[in-house]
Image 1 (cartoon, rainbow, N blue to C red):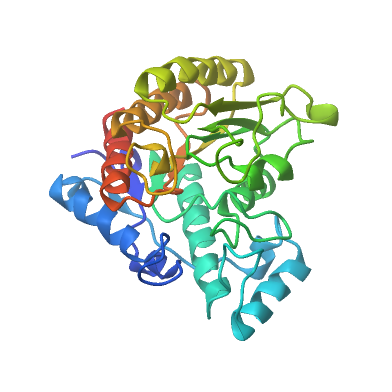
Image 2 (cartoon, helix red, strand yellow):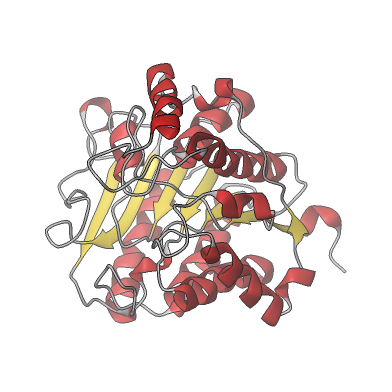
Length: 317
């Protein structure tokens, strides 16, 4: 049996399943069950250590989000309606359930930093569309942004890398750190001319002191594993040049063929390959430190296969 510090941590706390917008919604609570059932079917549930969810504190949330925005979410979750232009419902208790996602990601990052886990994975996380002061695209709070600020403030890390293979561009992270030269950002996504949120052009490489420090790779609708592997070589080259201290990996499964709201055609093997290669790079530059987050994915079988494959790669790498 692997020693405790070599374990892979996985959040399978059912509190995470509270984040969502009800049965029948693309981002429904059954996404968590689909993942964990596949983990059990593969026997991976017996190979991983548990990562608990918890509510992130107001102080932690304000590392990234504005106080006014947090007040707005609290108010809207009581009155109802939408938090944005019609994508993200203000369901009752949404601030509390979103804060559990953030807390789970922070627990995973903290566990990796103190060597409780070699690496960690949080399935219902990677809410990459929320900005510092707005909700977007089913994302109320941006656990990634909070984690970046947390790792900097609490652990003094300077060079953090964020890698995103979700079909949708990680705009909430990109624009929050667009002028930050220390944050490495590599994102493969369906071309924004064809898919929400319409951002992430190849010429969006950062601004000001961060000019030419980010990597956006728009993928043509219908692109499959061959195109993914070709683009992935650029991600690895970029990360080797950047030499990060810690990696955050958003592995949204909506880039897999058969997702109901996107048009890429990867197989789950693409996600497993990315996870294995990032682990190798993390061993080289980051003391092995990497946290994976499930992100999007609305075909339940696809997300179960992709996320379990990422965990398997984390275990084997």
